[in-house]
Each structure stands twice: as C-alpha cells, then as structure tokens.
Length: 129
Image (cartoon, rainbow, N blue to C red):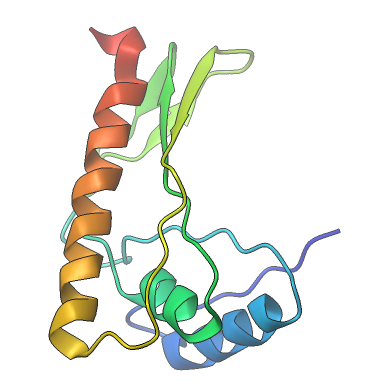
C-alpha cells in the first residue's frame, strides 16, 4: 500500500511538506523527487532535507540509469525507460540531518545532497558510457 502526496515547490508545497512530515512521524517510508517542476534542471529542492531534519529520519539518495530509454525533449530531459530495459540504481549511505542545524547549515546540506545525487546519477549511467 502507498499514498501519493502531490505538491511542488511552486504549487501546494507547504501542505505536501506537512503531510510528508506527519507520515514520516508515523513510520511511513517516503520517496521524493527532489527537483522542482520549474527548474533549473537537477536543482535539489529543500523538502527532503526539511522533512529529514524535522523528523530525524535519514535521507537515502538514488541515481537511476537505463540501458534503453527515450530522452524527452523538454527542459529537464526526462528519461523514460523502454519496456523491459535494464536499469542500474545506485544508492547513497543514509544521510542524517541534525535538528540543531541553522538556516545556513541546512542550506549547505541541501547543496551537499544535490552534489551527491548528481554524482550517483552519473554513476548509474553506466549503460551510456
């Protein structure tokens, strides 16, 4: 079973963030696509870090690559895997965000998560090399 929480950095984000925090407090696992709908591309938005900080749960980042895929010609070059394509998923170690972090330290963690996720994504693209 799963629940879908819709929200983004531009529409409904505050409500979605509150719902995610409630779910995390009740031991639900949460999956987030961390870049917003308006870009820029590969820019890690704050929702995952704020949720992890408020609830004291780790973030596990994942990069995904597909052997056969279609790259959409839109602003974020979204990739759609072909049916039965091989995939490679590369995970980070758990990243814990301290509740005591101030605004600047939290912003630094967002930047670190963004950098790490971009590295994982490159590593997962083994099929494209």
